[in-house]
Image 1 (tube, one colour):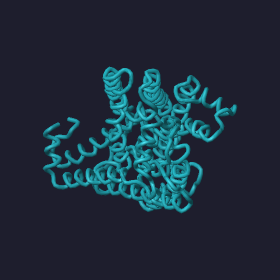
Image 2 (image 1 turned 30 degrees about the vertical axis):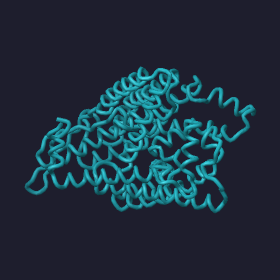
Image 3 (image 1 turned 180 degrees about the horizontal axis):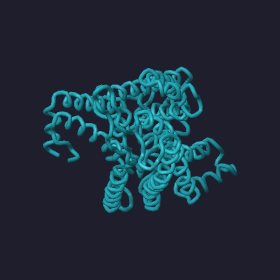
Length: 428
């Protein structure tokens, strides 16, 4: 691996991409420490030491690298861009025009990217308005000072504009990494935010009742889940595909045998994020209600993080979204049509609709395994850490899956570029 690192930095083009990616990551981290207009850093730090936040804000704070609770210009992090990208993908099922654009190739995808950018800015305005409006009331559970002193409508508007502009800048930085750097820009920035939070998370574990014993247990759990995630993410079902011979002029094409790889977890970590977001909405709504109300009491008792009802719904939603998202991203009819168009077929299966039905059957069976894997990896750390009382929802299977998944994909990208230049890669 040391030789691979040395080879990566000896290659001028790859070295330039790696250094550019690191430079963007540094800019992203610096932006998390720049406060929004009229935000008192002293008061924010005092609020952070006095109180905590709910699970929903903890998750957003994790993705933003701690910028949310610092009320910086990058408070929203990459979350609006992620949400907009997912919404545009889901709209392909509802709006035929979006599906047509997707099939048009590069021109259609460019139009979908434009829609994603507009939607990101709209979500940025909406989410920044919520953050600014609750900064002095519900952002922190208990706080004796106001993070935004002397707040008035003009102050709120300027803070919202600054956070929205920060969202647009993050979106631009992510696209710069994708175009000129290494890996997927959106994933790299999420990776950066989660890694930035780990030292403070471990420091909080050490300060807990268990001290260094809890820290060692957390690290052991992290390593164990990492091994499981790497094994499952690398696993795939290979369906053999045979291509018929075609004679064009004096040349013969096709006649080769290859395979169609189907990953066990095709939905990646998206079902976990969807399930977490939906289950945290009731808790966020309850924070605005009267503590003595019946519905607030019901939510706090049965839908709080760690309760049996919460964990059961969490697992069921993960399984549901795993099937739902896989059915959207893996279009078996489109794959079968492409195979038929290029003369490919699965041995023993007729081309066309029988091939699509067979792929759907195999995909559904594999998705069951992937869905249960996601549920177990997401629930085990949550149950274990909540019973130990050492940390909240910002640390667990979701963050570990994101870290390992992004790390693996980035290493594969670098490895592919090294092998193009006849170097041994990281994975050999």
